[in-house]
Image (tube, rainbow, N blue to C red):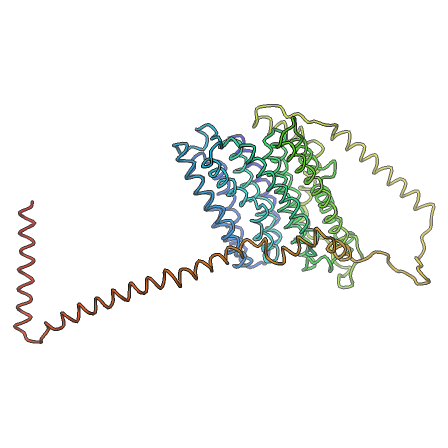
Length: 563
């Protein structure tokens, strides 16, 4: 119950901020009443899923969320909605099948009235994987992510902030925690499999994010990448890993929603999100720039922001206490996670430079101004939370929420002291500002000359970084796989469906046609035989009627005798 309340509280806080933003963003938009209705119903059904203690009740709310997901995404594109219905629907099918088996194993429908099931047999492990895949599909791990990327092209950034960035993460990770902690005792082999999925999600999605040149698609791939950290931390099975995974889920919804809403601000003012068409927005939209900067540093794991604290806990949870085969894998996955964080920083350096710090294109007018304050307020609140949940993480989140959930104090390891680190960072910023001001007073500025030519602005366009990174071998390989559709789960499923449809058409359907044709010929043959008795003479018809009455009376007398 404490875990459920934790998810309910933060889902409504983030959902409320997004709805508040939408009240101004959706003005004049088509089908806005449907948007608010579907969004509110989604929050209600999510609350029902969090509160359910009966598997059947849980599945009813969970299935309703799939219908609402289709409804919300259909506001942008029915094709994207169908893709999401296919991908998430397959995950839900695995979940329903796994829950059905689990009910048979536990002989009950209660979600808390049984001891965790050991995964020491093939059947139990199979049931565990079915439910775990259902949870990870909802959270959007790599392989079940294509609808998120499609939604980045067809739906608004507000929708992306609400679903793949916030609520779907809450739902998927909630179920994943319950599966790994309450429903099953996870074996070492399954632990390695789940951590491998998390590590692969981190690396593959962040590599694909590096080569994106659309702001929304870049953020969408990072929404997928961050799920890997949550899965990695929770699958580790340690208290620090579990706390880190849950805390990272909260942090991700905060800074990822802030980033998507900032992208919505840019789209609202400029009507485009292509990085090559942006630039110089730091002075035109300073609040959006400041909030994007804080959220970018948070998602990249830079101290003292909240993303660093949750990643630090996950890293600590992966450090093995003893030497074993699983501990070797944990070290490998730890290195991958840290490398993924470095690549995240690189991609957001590209984003910040391209959208805000690079040279302003001529197409962007100097008259472009910041969005209304009511659209600034939600991202300002989220940016403040990024700072508060980083500096005061232990007091605001870990002790009040996680210690009661796990019934034990959460002890930080290592030398990280958020208060001291924050103080030192601010001192460094102050010293830097003083040096900058002194340097500005002491030295004059002049035009730059290179080879005798005057350079008006030394800043380059934001696409140069993209073109440079795209040429690297690891990124190029993953980008090639993505272009070939290897990760397009919806495309693969449709291909399988077409194959099965051909089998049905040329095999089963043809057989059914033969059977029905044979039955038709038999019916016509019998009816043709009866036609010979229809001579058109009245006495013949009377004779047939009398014969029928005799047969009916005989049947009735037979029935009466039996009674």
